Image 1 (tube, rainbow, N blue to C red):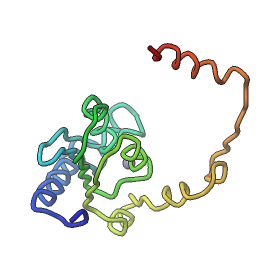
Image 2: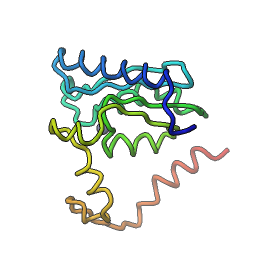
Image 3: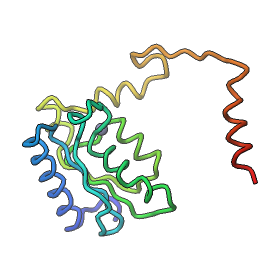
Length: 157
Ligand SMILES: [Zn+2]
């Protein structure tokens, strides 16, 4: 059942596409997302990278930010509908907050044909740290544990 599409799925994907198209008219990139819990819409979002020069403001990220309070509480049955295949950053964020299901519209082939392919990032993420195209260096310091201890002390009753 998990991989089967419902009429509600189709309706939400159409809505995400509509949001994406409207976003282009406003000067944004062609992506929209709808976050739902069951068949309740929690929030709708679009790619807003153009508004604040925030390259992380993908539609899915904006939806997660808008639903932050809800997602911090125990939840289940949360689905992210995205007009296009989520990129690696958005997938990581959705894994981090425990989204249960992702449904997307435009697939890799369609996105890549327009220059919006996500596979290059997924390919980099499969590589080990330091081999993904960014220099990554561990700099051990004895004081690194101080903030952890401070948090542990503040939150232990
Ligand atoms: Zn993304």
